[in-house]
Amino acid sequence: MITYLSIYLSLAFLGLINATQRQKRIIFVFLYFFLVLFVGTRFETGCDFQTYANRFRLLPSGQDALSFSAEPGYFLFTFLVKKSGLDFIWINIFGAAIFFTIF
Image (tube, rainbow, N blue to C red; front, side, top):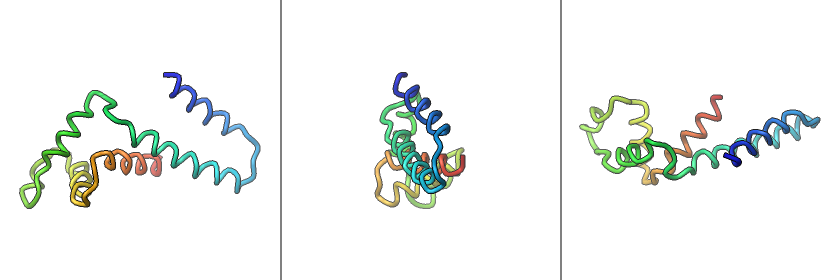
C-alpha cells in the first residue's frame, strides 16, 4: 500500500511544481512510461489474472477463433498479441499504454 500511496503523492506534488512547458513535457513523458511499466508489468496481480492468462494460453487460432469470446475487443487485442509471438505480459503493457493515452 505504501508503494501506491508514494506514487500518488509524488504525482500530486509534481502537479504543484513551477516548471517551463518543456520541463513539464519531459516530466509527463517520463511519468507516462513509468506508469505504463508499473501497471503493465504487474504479475499475478488481481483475482482474475489466472483467468486471463489461461484464456491467452488456450486461445484458438484460425477461423473458429472469432466465436471464442463474449469480449470481442479484448479477444482481438489478445489474438493480435499472441499472433505476433509476444508473451502474455505484453497484453498488460499495451493495455496500460492505451489506458494512459486515452485518460
